Image 1: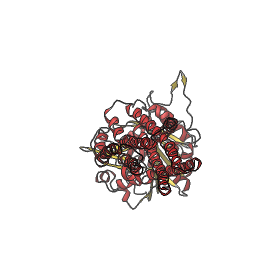
Image 2 (image 1 turned 90 degrees about the vertical axis):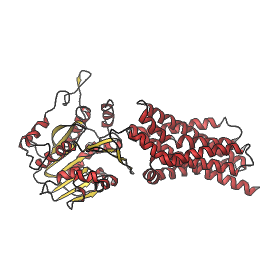
Image 3 (image 1 turned 30 degrees about the vertical axis):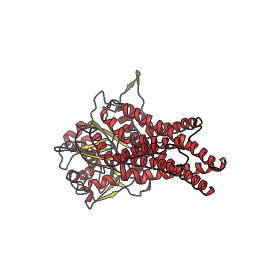
Image 4 (image 1 turned 60 degrees about the horizontal axis):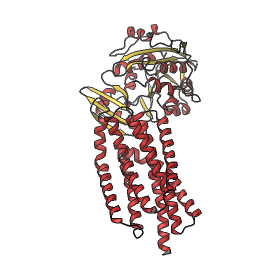
Length: 515
């Protein structure tokens, strides 16, 4: 009898660790879903963590009202977590594709609160059951809580380093749901003598298991068809790396790359963007021996730089190896970038751009900053005075830098805040913008240690769009896109974006709200 009680209590400790692992995986999964589909990763992770913890508090309060049938209660909690959590990602993609705007956010926050509430009921029930078996309350509480906290760490590590990169968000949810269901089934078997009508419980568990297995086998394919609705053209490549979701679409001759749902380029008009990004800066620099490209993992900016025979070395720093690998293997991207990343003059480094600038001792004649827009904390860091100061410190005398700076039409205040931030480092600047049909009107900020005179610059390499004459027209801004902004009847005073005061994220979110 004592041996049986020991076996049961030990399983309860294991069960608390396992369900904790599942709970933390669902928690961070919901944050990842929000970040990918709704944007602003910090906001979504903050909301999901807050809602999940609030739910756990509600669940703990509800657990007080459970007086009998602790094991059956626990089993059905696991059934619900398995079913709702397992189908959460699948349903989220379906809602995003077919339902009105805002429905996806409402669903995400409701499912987060619900799973959090169910998770909050689990632990008190397990602690009380361990106490019923004969383990002292203090001892059972301490052991169950230890298993819970340790499981939280394991769950987070599993999601970041294994589940998300290997299985993706849909399969991960179904797999974790299967684990929750397995715990419930084991409880039914281990405590079968204490549980009435066990056959009915097992049949219900079996039906949920069949649904989860079907989801595990076919859910991702169906979710892919849902996600296709989010993109204008057919998806020909999709991958979920450690850092982001990578999608390539194709419609006739138009190839498009999306990172976390954000368009990076269209092959129809990318030349307008990349020629303005690269060639004015190359013309401004007094020499072009060494060029640094921050971002630009698709290799197209590097292709433009390679047009200059006097360039000896291009250092391209892009965080995600999955992107640079795609750029060296996908036939469509290879055609677009002319296999630039395999050129002997190009050195690819997969590292955070901020980290690279902090650690590197190299100096460069030209720096090209082609990074995603500042829509979360991690990207905002790359649009701060601190970041641009680091870049300035790696710029040789006579050197020049170009920064993609979003749209002065759609995100007017964002563009001019980035410009003000770069100027605050002491560099001379020039503002440029160009119409890119797939993006709209897009802005760039060129910076140099010496004065920039656009009229003195010449485009000397083959281009599809940019000429010396056209270059001079890119510095003229209309009244609805210049830096003379009025707010509540008062001229708007722009302040540099810094790591201590990251104002750009909020400005960016408000600016792009209706686009």
